[in-house]
Amino acid sequence: SVGPSLEEGAPRPAAEPSQPAARRKEKRGCFQQLKRCLSRIVSIVKVPECIWDAFVERRCGRFPLDAPRLVDFVVGVQSKGAQEDGTASSPSASPLEVRRIPLEELPPKAPGTVRFVVVSDTHERHREVVVPPGDVLLHCGDILMSSSLTWQGRGLRVLADFNDWLSTVPCRERVVVGGNHDWALEQLPIAQQKQMLSAATLLHDECVSLPMSGVKVYGNAHSTGHSHNRAWQTNEAKVSSCCADAEVVVTHHSTWSLQEAVLAQAKPLLWASGHAHEAHGAVRRGSTLFVNAAISNAKYNPVQAPFVVDIRPCFPAEAVACRS
Image 1: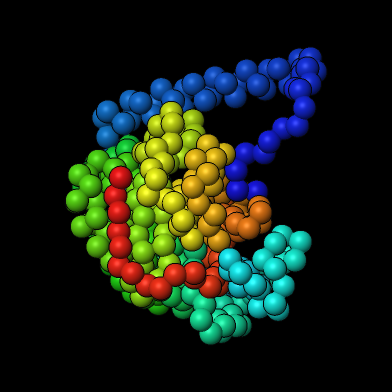
Image 2: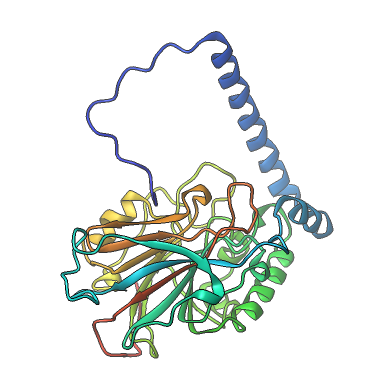
């Protein structure tokens, strides 16, 4: 799943909770209230960099040295026209098949296709990720870890290292959107945001036609949530007409409101997102493949596999970028 599920029919009345369950719920509510209060205090006082470095080292795991490097490979080519076997590109004619395979067993892409490598939610563990070779890397946000709680200089230091890492990945083009943990990035003027991540194309309610691959990509950093990490979280998602006819959409969170706004103007082949770590996976809805490529699991260990998706673009390469 890549978003909240839709409930069918009228809501059923909730059963009366037992006393132990009610006490647990009350304790959880108190804990969440305490957590929010502490977060507000810390966001004002700011945690020293050395202490936050130690916190991130303890909170965010490492990739196990003895574990195999795997990728989630979406079998087949996503295209507006016919599939590789000549059948129509409808859900019934092209059932979704995702294979988790060793990195070294990744098959070559078909001629005339563009290979996308999708990652998200690296949370300062980007150097733990081995990116397979591809044409375009998509990073769906949450580069940092709760950057609003520590000094801005620390966030900028990590972003500079992330940009250096981007320049080394084996993909000719790279597209990035911010995430709700990336407060240090959001605080910068837009021109400085793009300069900070100069090794990629940074998008927020913007689109670009990638010059080498010829694919039109729309990006949006919007997400929803209840934590203190609120970068790019607004009551309503802003979606401009720039997204019209985008073949690939990159968002931090694939909310229903974003889907409604974007899919009214575009029918993308691929929608890449993250945010919900436990929802790592892929699903096809209509003609669009939705991928949640969160690298971090629910415990913030960077052990979930990158996605590899091949698409056949519709239009020739044109270096056209637009901004709302």
